[in-house]
Image 1: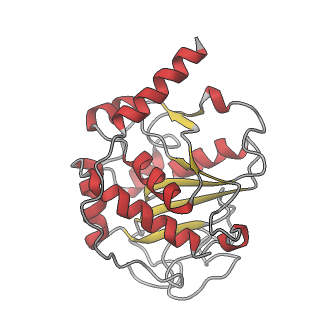
Image 2 (image 1 turned 90 degrees about the vertical axis):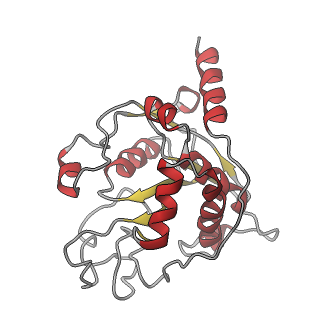
Length: 254
């Protein structure tokens, strides 16, 4: 029964995740590494250091680092919206490639893991899963497409380790409303049966991929699931971060 269920899961992932080749790869302005806190992902006005910015230095994020392309605004926001809600699959390739190139640049000390051939070793890219009903209705699994493109750029594996039940949708909710919802805001997060071994990620750097980081509850829940399987590090890679309306951690007004 488990073999049949896993086979159905794999077929569904492949079918719903079919992507058109990128039609263009226009240059996209991405943030400098000095413009965000690499511990929590929020914007800063100056380099915050390994201890984090003023907002996260006294907290314990579930990630060992956060990688982003920019703030959730302007052209980047438009591309994310087109990919996520309008099935513009061609955006997934360039955006995922940009995330992979940023990771390869060693922003989160990835360069220490790069052998002579330029490929990253002992690294697994894992997308944040979409609830099945939402994935079917939208006709696209955008996080899977992003993660697969990122993994191709990095020369490493991409696997769907997690699954997620349908729950409360966060689209249209304010930040405070999202925080008040149950953790994840989109249903229970689970480890897929084929990865259920307690040490199945032992020795791996796991890169968790999502489109937008808002409150961080979904990513936190996913990271906590992954931590149970013994990875060396769990890093979060997102296209954009939705900055809070109050002053950012480095003192900027957003």
